[in-house]
Length: 169
Image (cartoon, rainbow, N blue to C red; front, side):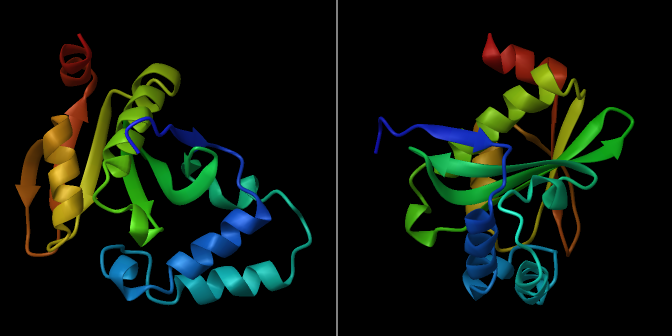
C-alpha cells in the first residue's frame, strides 16, 4: 500500500452518497463526528427522491467537499468549511474502516492543506477533534498542527500558512 495514491475528488456521484450513508450508519464512525446520529437517514431520505447522478452541489454548502479516493476508489470524505476571516475548518472521515491506520488520513489531510493554502487561499486551517478520537489527534499532531485549546468536548488544532510553508520547505 506504500505506492497507493490518495486523491481528493470534488465531484460527488450518487454511488458516493450511498457509500457515505452506509459509513454514517457505523457507530465506530459516528461517535467521532458532530453531524448527528440521524445524518445517514437524512441522506437516504434525500437520495430516495433524486435521479441526478452528480450530487456535488448538495455537499458543497458553506465550503468545499471532496471524496477521498485511494487508487480511484472512495474510502472517505473531507470537507473544508469556510469559517470567515481567512480561516477554514477541516473535517475528515475515513469511512472504510479497513483503511484505518494505514496513513491514508494523513495523506488526505496533506492534500487538503495544499488545496486550502494554495488554491483556496486560506490563511488558517483548524481541526476540532472529539475526545477519544486518538487516530485523528495523532494525524494532526504528526503533520505539525499546533494544539490550541481543549475543552471537555473538543480539542482544537491549528495550522497557518506560515507554519505550512516552513514544513513544506
